[in-house]
Amino acid sequence: MTLPKVSVIGAGQVGSTTAHLLALKGLADVTLIDVVDGLAQGKALDITQASPIEGFGGRVQGTTDYAAMADSRLVIVTAGLARKPGMSRDDLLAANAAIVGPIAERISRLAPDAIVIVVTNPLDVMVALAIKRSGFPRQRVMGMAGVLDSARLRAFIAQQLGIASTEVETMVLGSHGDLMVPLKRFTQLKGKPIDTWLNDAQIEDLFQRTKDAGAELVRLLKQGSAFYAPASGVVEMAGAILGDAHKILPICAWLEGEYGLRDVCIGVPAQLGSRGIDRVIELELTVQERQALSASAEQVRIMIQQLVVLDAFRSNNAIMENKP
Image 1: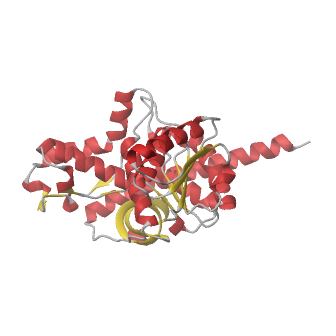
Image 2: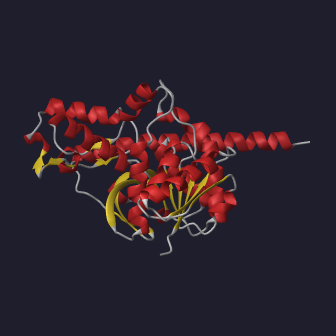
Image 3: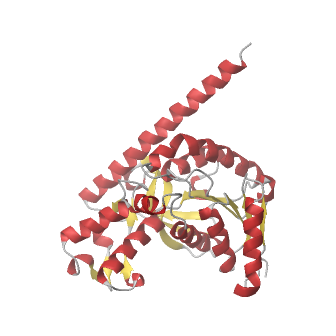
C-alpha cells in the first residue's frame, strides 16, 4: 500500500516524536527536515531501525534539504525555539517568527498543494503568519493547540478522580496561552456533568492548572518543553486529515465571522478531512463564554499587530542597508 508523504520540519523533541508516531501508526512515509546537519538524518535512521521490532513499513528519511518536502500531502511545522524557565509563549514571538515565516514561503514554493499544521509557539500568531507568508487558503493552514489543551484537562481531571482519562470529555477553546477558554458546560465524566463530581473551586483549580500546564513542564524539565503530548496531538490531527475522517477536533483556525470574530487565528472546534478544515463548528456559547473567547482573540490580535510592526521595521532596515 502506498502511504501519503508527510514532511515534518524541525527534528527536535516534538518533531522527531511526531515522525516516530506517524511511522508507528502506519499513517505516512515521513521526511524529517532540520537545518542542523546530521540531526534529522540520525533520528530518521534511529526510527527506521525500530521498524523491524514495531512492524511498521513506512519509510522515514532525514535531511537538511527543504526541497525534499516536494509532493508532501501534509507539512507539519515544529521548528523554533522552545521555552526556557521564566519565559512565556509570547516571549518567543520575534525569534520564532523569523523561523516560521521563511519556512511558510518555502512550503508554498516546494509543496504548493500541501496542508500545513503549525505547532511552533506562540501558536496562534505563528498560524496567522504561516497563512500570510504561504498565501494558502485558511482551510489548508491550521495550528495544533486545542487538542493538546483539552487532553491536558482530561488528564488532570482523571488524575484527581482516579478514573481513566478516556472517560472524560471536554473542550478547550481560545488562544494557546493564559486566556484559553475551558468550557465547563462541555466537560463530562462518564456522561455526567463535571459539577456532579467536583465543586466549583476544584474545577477552577483544574482549569488554571491546564492554562499553566506548559509552564509547569518547562519548570520541571528545566531544559526544553513538552513533546510527547504535543506530538500525540498533531498526529491525531494528521490522522483525521490523511484518513479523510471528517472528525471534529479543537484546532487553531483563521476566522472569517465565526463566533463574531474576523481576521484572527484562535482555537475553535473544526471538522477535519482530506481538504484540511471542512468547516468551523460554531457551538452555542453563553454570553460569558463568548466574552472570554473574544478577550482571548483580542490578545492574539494585539500580538499579530506587533508582528506586523516588527516586519515593517525589518523591511525598513533592509531598505536603509541597501541604500548607496
